Image 1 (tube, rainbow, N blue to C red):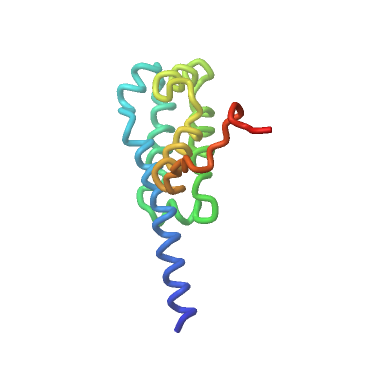
Image 2 (image 1 turned 60 degrees about the horizontal axis):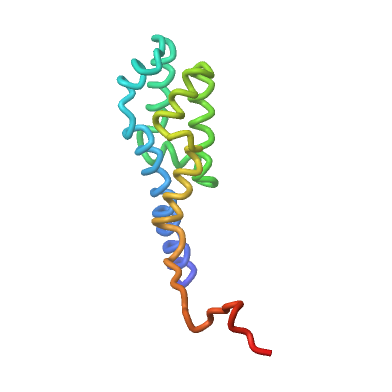
Length: 137
């Protein structure tokens, strides 16, 4: 019975853990107005179709989880390499500068995830402060 409860708890924990990554994935798609981005970047019809196919690749959590269950943070790299392959280097630079302010999208999502989910807040305990000007001989 204990083993069954442990396995169930572990399954629920991993579901919640990777569900946050899936929410980031969906947010990376919905946070950009792709029609305006296509106009701004000067994408042709073939590029627009490839990006729409890329955006619709994983419409639900189960399809996404089949691919990224073991490494849920790998979606960042896969998605942005695919976008880089679809666009020309000039278009990708403009996309990168406008939508991610020149920062790596993976680092942005990693930092957001760590900030909100990964680690508890750390508080400084003033009792253990070491100051260089206070040592005694």
